[in-house]
Every structure is written in C-alpha cells, then in structure tokens.
Length: 305
Image (cartoon, rainbow, N blue to C red):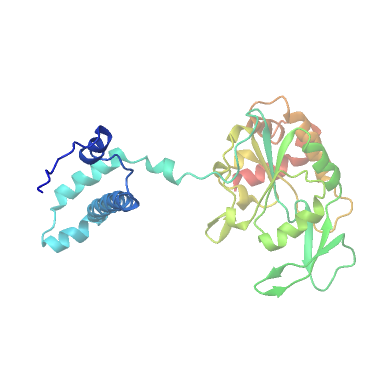
C-alpha cells in the first residue's frame, strides 16, 4: 500500500522563527574589535602629532641658529653696509640701552614725599679696631673674612642711639658703607636692634673709581632732591657733593656731639622740598643757624675738593 506523503505547512510561529533574522546582542568579540579600532585610531593621531611637532621644532632650531653660523655654512658673508642696516633695524626694535642697564639698588618708596638719609658706618656712626682690644669698646663682632675669623672691637659714637631714633621718625634711613658685608652686617645687627634702619648697602654697591670707593646716589632709585648723604670721607660723595652733609671722623672722643647737631639740622630740613637747597643754605657761608657755624669751614673745604 502506497502511502501519500503530505507536506504540512508549519505553524506561523515556526516560520517566523526560521526565516526572520534573529535580533541577538553583539558578541563580546565584536566589542573588543571596536575598542581595538578606536585605540589604533588614537595611536595613529598621536604619531601624526609627534611627526608634526618634530618638524616644528626642527624649523625653530633652524631659526634660532645664529645668522653668522648659517652664513659660514652657506659660504658667504654680508657686506658691512648691510650689517649696519641690520643693526639699525634691530636698534629700532629693541628697548633703549639706557633702560636696559639702569639699576636701582633700593626698592621704590611707598610714599613719594618721603625723604632719605644715607649714613656712612665707620668713623660716622661707630669706630672699629682689630686686635689687640682697646681700653674701651661697646661690643665685639667676629666676621669671617678670607676664611679667617677676625675680632673687631666696636665703639659707638656718642648719641648714636638717640640720633637713629629721631631721624627714623620722619626719614627713610639707609646705611651705605664701603665696608664688607661680613663685617658691617654684624655691626649693624648690634647697633640697630630695633630695626630703625630701613636698608643696608655694602661695598658691592659702591663704584670703584681710581682705587677709591664712591657711593653713587643716582643708582638708588630716589629723587636726588629728596636725598642727603652723611659721610666723613669726601671721596664717597664726590659724584653728588651737593647732597652731602660732611661729618668729622669719630675715633675715641667721648665729648663728640656731631650727631646731636645733625638731629637739629634734619629738623630744620623738614620744610624744604629740595634737600640740596637746605644743604646749600645751612652749610655755606652766611648760614643762619648754629649748625651752619659749626660746619661752614668743613663744607666749604669738602665742596672745593
């Protein structure tokens, strides 16, 4: 008996299952492949940037190479006339030389109306002597100079404490000494425990001219009309004698009263806008104060030198 083979149509759900593409999630393998592609793209970008930076630095190095060196490699040189034109062009583009080399040894003043007194140290405020120790002294400093510790016995000038106290109330006080910093800094630490002195300048701030140390007030960053220097050495203020208040040398005179006279002088200076006029009026012939009488001969001698 022959049986008929009957083809049955599968249910609709089975058809859909067989012929409709399945919606499956992306496999982990595909995800890894995508990440790898992104990393390759990033690496490629980094390498491209690296090559571009290398080219840029190569060009910069070429530009920074001194022109003279490049000219030697090229085997030619520019005629002097063209070099002069180049120098002239550069001078127009650069900052003026006077501005580049100007220096101010002190920071700017907070108040423009403040006046400044520059004080010498040795034989003006104190007198120092090395070993052997003298009969009288106020304190000892032991600086190390040229690798050797030395003893200096320091005697303060009569009235120096009162003098510093008084002038620091209305003036900016700066000690400007031709002494070495190793020595002078120790002396000033003992002399000025209250910090009445605003700034300290040492030998390295002086100019050496013909074997002498000169204190150039034009490098202080201060208006010369509002500046006075007190010093026993005329060579120190030879560049600005009109700003100088000479003082006698102090060694061991217990009756010395020079600093008391200076206190009176600086009190008389307060109304003056230009301290040089005060110096001229009170320290010249025909001065109207007792201070002028004491100093008239010394100042006249110093200003002529």
